[in-house]
Length: 248
Ligand code: PEP
Image 1 (spheres, rainbow, N blue to C red):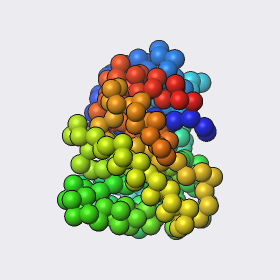
Image 2 (image 1 turned 60 degrees about the horizontal axis):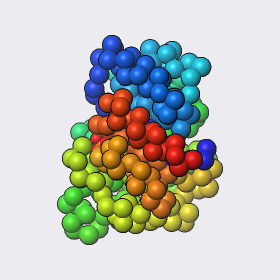
Image 3 (image 1 turned 90 degrees about the vertical axis):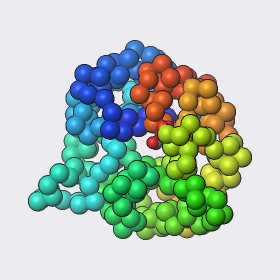
């Protein structure tokens, strides 16, 4: 799909009613009800939201998927087949909060990516360095190590989200130069190391707001945005989607 892709990551927020109201508010906005807009809602609300989104353009996204491929005795897990069953188009894989709090590592993330791909869901591999890693100067190496998962994937469409950890939920946005440098480095790495995928698309995430969305989305090699905090406010998210809509 050409144009910019916007995915809202609601994280562990909302309740059944507020999730429904948020999606209803987005559906009322032509700028949001577009096939290049996705919402990653908490897993417990995905089925209800999937039903609400049927026949509409906004895509449903999950925030995580099990590394286990088949049904079985994996208490608490949600498989890619289950996500596919309720209409998920995308799933986030390896968000920095999952790497930080659940110690997710490359072998697990590869399994998650492969499970999503096998179920026909587009995985969004999230990569990004911490502030300490940036200050030490080895941030590109950190990102290449996280991208290494992609060298093991044989086929299928996936997305990459560059999310500097120091910019997530902090209000600190990477400069446009920093974003351009990393997005270009990610694409070059993929061309050299990843097996051919349909396209290499890289979203930026980290304190994207209505005020900065357009300049970020216009930056070289930025193919969209992964939006956390601002995706919980229908008005802010609409403005970000509008900024993306202008760039089609
Ligand atoms: C995120 O968690 O993916 C994110 C980008 O969060 P925020 O926009 O709040 O920085």
